[in-house]
Amino acid sequence: MYKMPHIGFEAASGAFDPNAEPVMAVAQGERFSLGARSLLTGGLFERTGEYEKLSIPVTGPVAIRGAKRGDALRIDVHEIRIADRGAMVTLPGRGGFTGGLGRAGRVVTIVDGNVQFDKDIRIPIRPMIGKIGVAPAGESPNSSTVGAHGGNMDCKDVTAGSALILPVHAERALLYAGDLHAVQGDGECSLTAVEVEGSVVLSCRVLPGVALKRPVVLSGGSVITIGDGDDLDEAARLALDDMLELLQRDRQWTREKTAMLMSAAADVSVSQLVNARASVKVSLAARYFNSPPFSIDSANTLKGEAH
Image 1 (cartoon, rainbow, N blue to C red):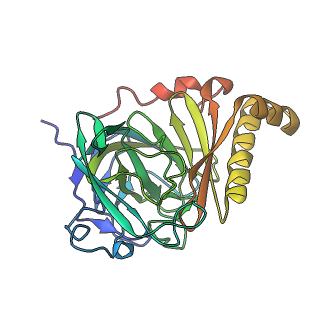
Image 2: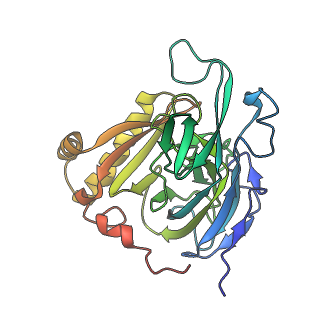
């Protein structure tokens, strides 16, 4: 009987480290499982109010056989399993609100597919992966950093059934993932979403010859580019530039015609605005693309692969 490879959240890393020894190696198309820590792991959250001392690492790295520098890596998210409790915090000097917020922590329960936020308020869950990425070239960014490697994108569209495509910077890619959220709004405006322990089931496939500068998410019938920056303006320009380049290459249109289509049909929104680097996403229906890996037909590319 096939037993899916699994690595628990004990294999935690505070960085996307290209020099780390892989915790496991998997074949292309092979499903594997990673555990994920949260603010509640270890019990410190409930014993202290010094929430700024807490961090959420990623699990990994996982070596993907056959992945080489210059390739792209498609990561399919098959399942996200979450615990029945989550935590949220606010901290002075953090968050997106004028006037700031105080230090506060909150533990919530998850019952029947809903976050029990208050006695009379339930929020339907939509589990997602906050941090997922590959090792960058020649640096080890903190696990809370977003960039060309992916990382702390906090893109709420990275859910079960979605796929993430990343440029590969290191041999065998070296994939990390963690920071699961039971639910998150675009922007993650108070600093955290509903942070939960859990595990994810993933598989990977190398896409030779697919040139990417930054992450691309395939989710809900849309192609989503992710830009990062010191502010939202910079992040938005990069996400827009990436979508323009992908669509122009696919359609062989002029920049001007491509930009017009985007202005009519693409949406620009905030993924995360509360960390050191902001992330912005541009979403465009996959039906506007003609060719894999971004066309609507590409969503079924990995059906029937090993599992």
